[in-house]
Amino acid sequence: MAVEGLAAIGAGIAIGLAALAAGIAEKDIGAAAVGAIAENPKLFGRALAIIVIPETLVIFGILVAFKVLGMF
Image 1: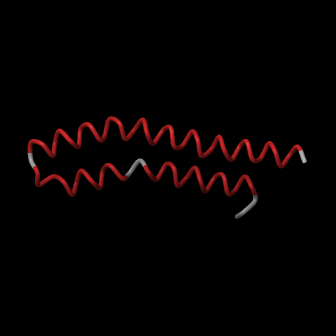
Image 2: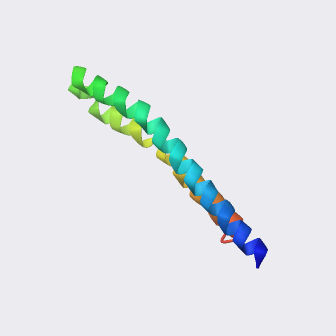
């Protein structure tokens, strides 16, 4: 019983810290992307692709959480 609770806490921490790190990364990347788009609107596609990259951190956090909970 206690082991399952600790596993749930670990899964929550994995997702939470991954989401926090992605948010911090997107803050700086988003500001730079908006500045680049303001100067050259043709960079919208590249900026959008670069903004999406930190979201992979959250996907990895979810995968770790599933692994900790034994769903994989």
